[in-house]
Image (cartoon, rainbow, N blue to C red; front, side, top):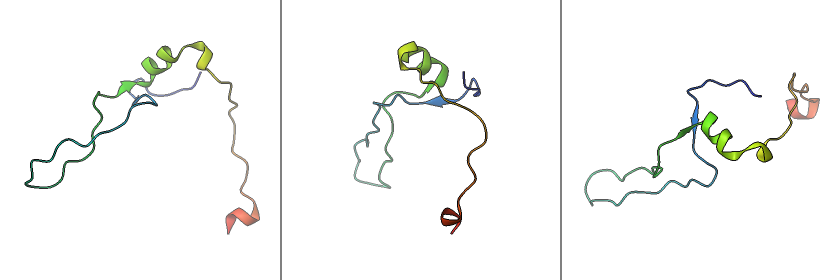
Length: 69
C-alpha cells in the first residue's frame, strides 16, 4: 500500500492527448486528454491485484562522488 492523497488524479497509461482543431485565428490550441483524469484509487482498482508490484521503502542510496559532479 502506498500512501497518497485521495484526491490525486492521473490518466491511464494508454491515454493520449490530442490537439483540437484550430479555427485559424488566435493562439494554437493546447493538447488535451479526451477524458478527464481519474483518481489514482480508481486506476489501481481497475488494474487489479495481478498488476500490483512489491516495492521497498526507506531512504534512497547516497549519491556517489561521480554522480555528485
